[in-house]
Length: 285
Length: 285
Image 1 (cartoon, rainbow over the protein chains, first blue to last red):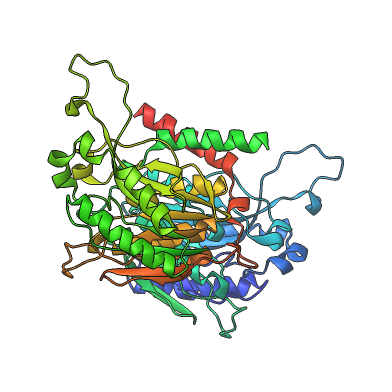
Image 2 (cartoon, one colour; image 1 turned 60 degrees about the vertical axis):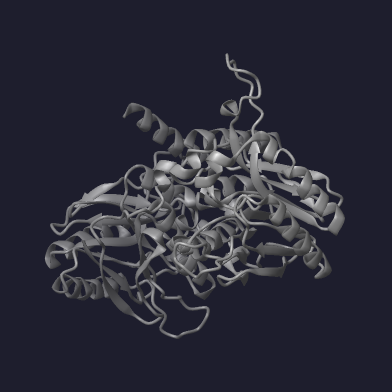
């Protein structure tokens, strides 16, 4: 499978600009033979949680999913798009229906196929920092695993992959490739260079980790450093800081000859006992 | 805490030679101000599982623990020693007591303090390859966490650390530093360079990973590459392939300012639900 990692710069709170840029990128990726294009986290609005709190409203974001779908359809390439979304909430309230103060928002990523059909949608489970918690609610569900061009793929978002647990759960369920929109700055260099390759290595899977580009080179700006990695942590491609679209061929089989069978050699019954002990100890605190 | 990583060459099936070498190394490490010396996996006999099957007998290995203790006492430095050990087994059998065919062997590591007192002993949970499974039985228990010179330390052995679960369980229980005797060849370079640093990063802990040295430089020989790493995956020191004793100061606090709080931000109740789903699916297969 040929994949495209779109290390781009989103315009803050200008979805029209961002979707226009995505259309151009999708056509380029399709022309390069890529079968899926992956965007960074919150591509649609830019990763600006501090500004999103005041900006977000249901009507502003209601069309995002359909716009990703339309671009996938028009350019003939599957797309992993990330955007803020309103969560369907049923709650008892005395306030008027439709009041935005009653809306829970999530950081979401969706995968649409090249006909614009939504294959899977996922909402971030591990929120990063107070700025995200102030605006978004965390989700609790793993991504479903879906088949794209014959490969079993699933989604994570940014901080999720810094925890071993969800990638392990996805790999144990049969995921071969994780698509991971992200937004990290220079302080997160060890994530792109150490943790993400370890997730691929320890599960014998591929991971495409797609970050925003830096325009300024400041340490407070985004890192860039988008990376595609595979079994044994081998880097297939890694971007520098500037805007760039990486085109990467993901090999057919994730299994390296004579390599460790991590999923087969793990000891889930032993871990379950340890975890039960941990939780008992935690509850006893 | 100052620690010494003994990247050495053990003489196969010659424990006397190996303990003599350890005495010399322990005195050197103590003279360098180190408070603990860590040996590679199965230091006492050499890492030769193919030969150990025929060689092992209770009486040959019964004194190993006491020899590590005696060297710690004599040199005034704590020691992490690794060796094959007989497991206490209660089983109904019709054969004569003491029959070696009835003995279960484990790959073990122990930590003795500078007075020769055993602080903790641990047996490998994740056995590597058919050659280990042919000779040894896997254990099921995490290392206890013990205090050494004011730091909460615990043990793992080799393949154990390639799985995220046990390091996570130890860190969740408060371990600050893991001492990990290992035995890997050049095929395991990604373990020393990617997975071990990720374990430190993703748990905000320190890991000292101590391998056998290479004498030949062949890819089939040991890798060397012993490494001490900390939070954010920062390498404190890393050895090349040749025999070397690394002396490393482990900083007082593992917490990097403004760094991710991985243990605080994990979502154990969500993971427990996923794990229950996984096991249900596995049992249904």
